[in-house]
Image (cartoon, rainbow, N blue to C red; front, side, top):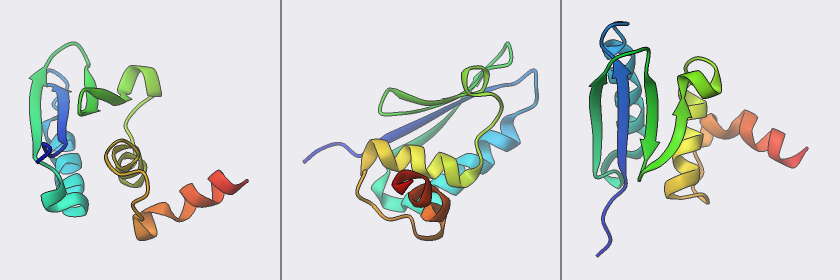
Length: 100
């Protein structure tokens, strides 16, 4: 039996980004449900906001320029844990770009 994927959202407590981190965790749990083993919220400082999946960095606020939209975050996580999974409405813009 393989371990289920884990998500780690590290957020800046100085910037008051707990609610944003919690909302993103909720979005991921609503989409992936029991296909995830854990979604962890990790307090940090210094303007950090990163999201990793199975130790793979999928989003970094500084590197990627701000915060991801929910649909984009779901696509990035999906691409790590199950690339063939259809995300329904969250994939509409993504699949059109891939085929162009």
